[in-house]
Image 1 (tube, rainbow, N blue to C red):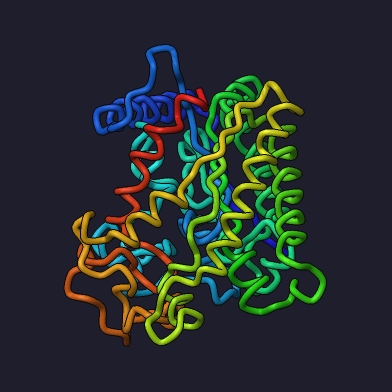
Image 2: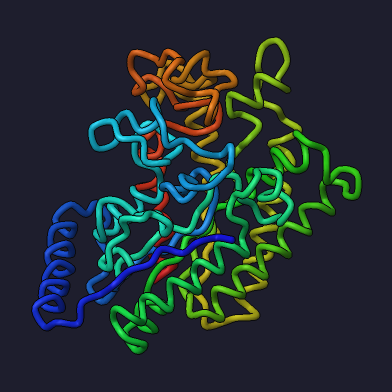
Length: 368
């Protein structure tokens, strides 16, 4: 059974004042670092993230799952080389989003045993490497936190947040926070194509319908719990990640068009599902956010963005290494700034930085 983190909060006046002062100082500090300027009347008190390994900041660390990376060389550029469970050499999109939005520098994993009360107020991360919209996907990854599991963590978070700031402030925080969801890659890549488990019962168009229905229900559940501003990232071009190019891209390791075509089909249906959600829940501000196109452009035109290698990762050979196959025994590239990918699935921090700021600039006004 999943164990939730526990906290004890002092009720003394001094502790309360110190807590409020800490929040104020953090807010002032990160406002000075913000790259994205919000309208004067806009307020984003917190960011909440659901998702998979692209967004995970360490929730899988204490789980018996192969989808873990809390060991070197992961995190070599994160706070002096600390492997925190982020599937990259440094920061991941969850961190960069909160930094761009002036909230804080890192988005803590909810299952981090060192989670501080101030983290609850400004947002947390429920993402889990290996998760997907399909419940079967998380089971394949041997204990990745499923969407229902991430939802349970969110419910627990709400209870704890009420214990810190009270029910009224909690409701206000939830209504004005931005919720980001990034899922679907593992469903298409692993559950459908790699293992073929869903191919026994579904052709891909039918399977994509299953995923979109599951996604819609998830958005509905977080909406009913108080979420109003919901940003949904589409699925990136999984056919162009180094691992897929190695196993299915032929001798020249081309992008796997079959996989990318499947992703495009799913993304189109996801966009239509989000349009339906807007009609069904007019009080919501839910936005479909395209990451497929910008990251595909970086991969295919990597030299334009200052990279030297776009089809291999920095770790090991860069062709198959990911999670436990990317470890301290593997050599790493001399300069990860030359690489689009860190391992055979996940981009480098440098790539994420090139993606996150422009995407937020493009879509955030629709969420406010």
